[in-house]
Image 1 (cartoon, rainbow, N blue to C red):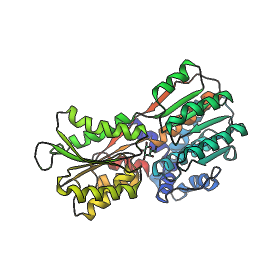
Image 2: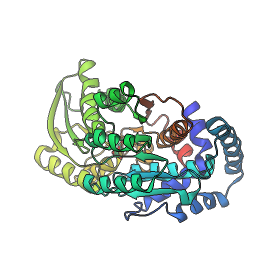
Image 3: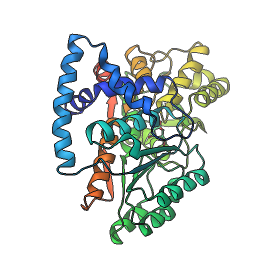
Image 4: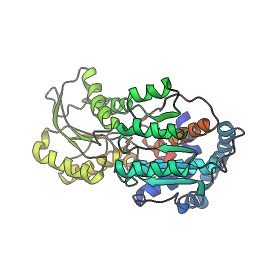
Length: 383
Ligand code: GAL
């Protein structure tokens, strides 16, 4: 499968990336953390024979990719400003680490020319950081906005300063994206279509032996643990997970829906609240991401319930811990939010802008379902 070859090719970085997430990632404002890249190169030192094969495959792929992605482009003096909506986010920690690795190791950017800032979940603070990037004259910006609705103002400022912008992860609205095209503005979005991830979650429930109707009362009674509802990923995953069921003619009943802001502790608390309120009536727990699903699992286990026996649980992202849970039957499924392909695409597109090429306004990467059938394969690829 092409996806997994690609993941395997970046496997060494992933090892490092995933262990960063396990530590919870950094949370302080910083320039590109030097240890990050050092650790990424040091990670593969203790390799088995099998891993060594992967290492040489990775080297081959990387050389081809560099040539393909950069051509004659010399990245060594190019400055990049990156702002992440919040460092304290498991998925964005994986993404950020891979982005820095790919820019430096594969595309030849210098670590000291890349500044990565923590938006700390505060749009005003992030906007100040972006103003500072503009004043310091960075060559290109890669931005994961706190609030995607700020894109028009930020885009205008960058455009006035002649700095191209690659937005990642939090998609500005369609009207704004059209404006970039119609006004010839050097701005673009790289992400995934969150409708697809929601649909995949619903399909994972439909694939169970009773299509989610554990108690056989003719309807699927679910709870929804949402991410940040300002975020289109949360909106679409909420809508399309349930739509997949209703489109298949399955009757549904929503028992509980609350925002958990992508956060594990909130996912745990909310699921505990829902279980206290609705107990055995809950058949399916939909979580907009894996961090919240990991929290939900803690609450489910504490309540003495058993996933895949008397309750179903699905998430999105394919954090290693969640994929392991799928393999162990503690989660029904998850969906791989391919941070490796997204980081690569964002960086490659930044290079295209710098080379004066035309760039499409929207660039989407596919999600992949993760179920018991392929969980081991995904885990091996991410390790
Ligand atoms: C989503 C991801 C979440 C969270 C969010 C931040 O795509 O699934 O875990 O990282 O992005 O915007």
